Length: 184
Image 1 (cartoon, rainbow, N blue to C red):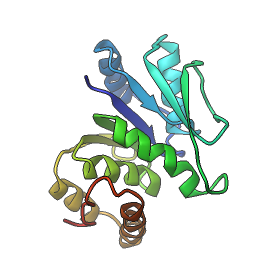
Image 2: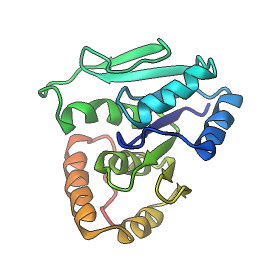
Image 3: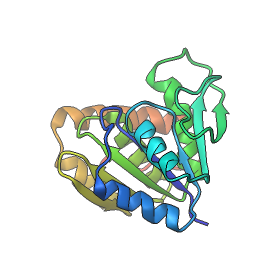
């Protein structure tokens, strides 16, 4: 069965009709949704799902406390050994969600490295991912590494460097899959 990992940028806190339609399609099919607990896209999606009384949701939290669980859904607390608050702390739950999902839907503000890292995780696990770029109001589907390469080549050099650095760190933390090269 399809299980959808939904996430996105903290700066992407408003959902438009295009995103609502995608979410409505997911709910109409009864797909399980796994989502993080961050402010921004996670919370906005949670609010929308709650407004539709959708119950097939599980909220993932790094450590002991969830920041947001709008619908009082089932939660999964991912144990973390690092200090609370850093990128590594919150990445723990994201890695698990990417492993458990069969597909991903990300809302991207055009700057968030974490959102792109989730896209990378899904693709590295050979899973389909869809990204909605808020500024362009456009969905883009990714199935193959060449699509990742083309997407990254169209981005700012500074953002590409950050992603390359983070994907290398990611590859050292996940030995269950051979890592997809940064620009393969």
